[in-house]
Image (cartoon, rainbow over all chains, first blue to last red; front, side, top):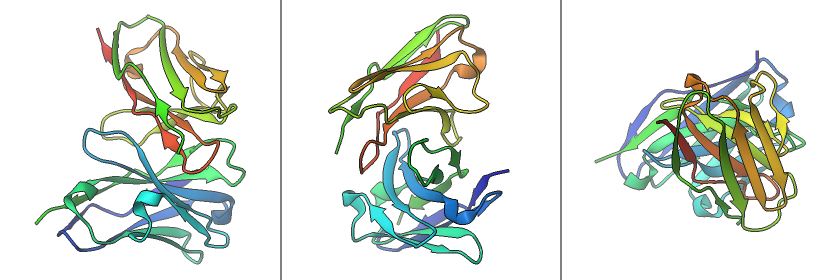
Length: 120
Length: 107
């Protein structure tokens, strides 16, 4: 079945970087664009950006420009999201989510989420 | 960015009730709207896309309507497993944006 499996929880100090992985299975890796969405404790959903696994092109939310990098490894069907210069406000659950390349059908497959805690 | 507004942020209902959850976009988004259900500690789940199309496997008691700026998610005959938070999301243009969510609680 179509599945996205994310890496485990991370604890980082302010100023550090974190890299979260999202491994896809059950479908053709290049047919689903991967979005990253985060959710701070008790808060709503916040879109961070998108990567096209086929060519690697990306688009980031303005808020994260300069701090976020999304990459992919087609040999392992894995997408990565790296966030740098971490601050306490980046403490959140980070989700990867897949959407058909047409962009018409919403985010229909989600990873389980990765908790990132930023604390000194 | 397009602002998505969900109000109220929470509502109370009983099993068997019909619940309607509104969502308003700050500008017209045609029918590029999705609804998600999220339970505590879990990832969101896609319920409806294109404003009114039910995602495969989602019970038919869920329905969506609207176009342009005003949208509604309706849950008919609320079941115990439906108590959760519901988010709307526009994907008309970038960045995709979510409403702040409506929590459906047990009365």
